[in-house]
Amino acid sequence: MIRSSSSLPPAEANLSPLEGNEVISAAPLDIVELLRRGHHPAAGAVVLFSGEVRDHNKGRAVAYLEYEAYHPLAVKMIHAILAEARAKWSLQLAIAQHRVGRLAIGESAVVVITASPHRREAFEANRHIIDRIKHEVPIWKCEYFTDGAHQWGNNCNCHATTGDAAKHIYE
Amino acid sequence: MKIHVYATLKDYFSSEFELETIAHNTDALKRDLVQLNDQAEQLLNSCRFAVEEGFIDNDYKLKENDTVIIIPPASGG
View: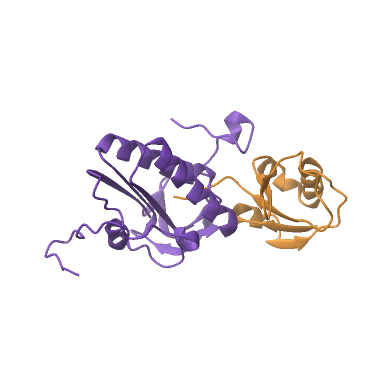
């Protein structure tokens, strides 16, 4: 392999996308390796989103997070969301990986990569994929605050408006 | 019936437990769970239910030996 002197990974097309359970990882997400898989000769636009652990939420100082997943469904749903987005925006590639376990401040909790001939589709699809993962996929965050308290996340509150836990509202 | 709960539901129930119930749909099961812990009522109304094969709704006929997974609103990302 040719080593680039730049910090960016070199373009290497046709590496296999994440398969099966690989879309959920107990190990730290390797953003550079994921981006390496995100290139495609027909794609002039590659968008990478990384959702990262911040040190505060609603005015409280966060020490670390823990993520839990119901793996059988979460894995199936991530693959289905990616397949739908690939078809809808005619993407060359759509990759997502979500972390579980204990995460420190600044670590990546989720990565979504989309690649398409032009940037518009890659941006739109990326936004769509991360929104759906956050609303629909059975993965949960628990925030541990510096004062010792903890609280399970309640990101998706759509059911309060739709009256149906299976119906979500997207912008 | 075997019940598995996740995330914030673990503040109200054991993560896995056996429930003596004749509930044959998710609405009836929800009522049984509220009997166990009435603090969980509002939360249970925002949850989805699943069996091994995937999500179920109230039309799904629950069987005594089913394992039911109760899924609170997602908070990943």
